[in-house]
Image 1: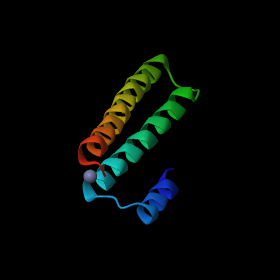
Image 2: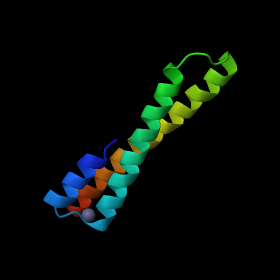
Image 3: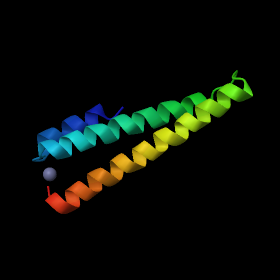
Amino acid sequence: MRITDRRHNRESEMLCEERIRLFDAYAAATLAYHMAVTIVNGSGETPEELSKTLMASVGARAKCVKARLALQEHKRQHRC
Ligand SMILES: [Zn+2]
């Protein structure tokens, strides 16, 4: 989903490897979260299945937020 953005960043900015790694983790977490939300919004699941999916989406969202904060913190500390 964010592959185009990443390619753009790699060409236009000097990124350190750690920042690239953190960005990739953030992009992957964002994608996983959006996929989880898509599944939650889908129909045809039993209440039990939906409950499990909702729990998974909460976990995916937490990972997404954590990954974003890690990226922001790295940029702040490293000034890259
Ligand atoms: Zn850096």
